[in-house]
Amino acid sequence: MTHQTPHTPDELDDLIIQEKLQVAMELQHDAWAESTADGIEPEIIADAAMITAIRETVRALGEDQAEALVDSLRERILAGEFSPGRVLQ
Image (cartoon, rainbow, N blue to C red; front, top):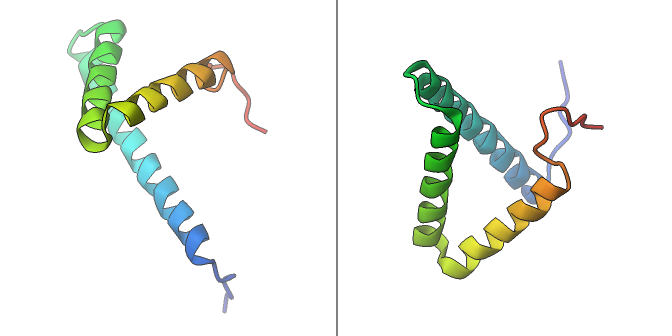
């Protein structure tokens, strides 16, 4: 019999968010692969994905929060978070 360590409500919320993020990323990856298989260039796919993401963020959260998200993404890009060769520790 295994005994699992109980999680706090905040930890459970974080786990749920991480699982949803993983599923969303898998769906995005599948859409990317399908688009490239249809002959669409990666730059066009990326542009369409970012336009959709920003539009939906503005719709859901407003322009100020969408701007804050874009600003945080810029910082994360400059920090190398999305670099393909980045090694997680």
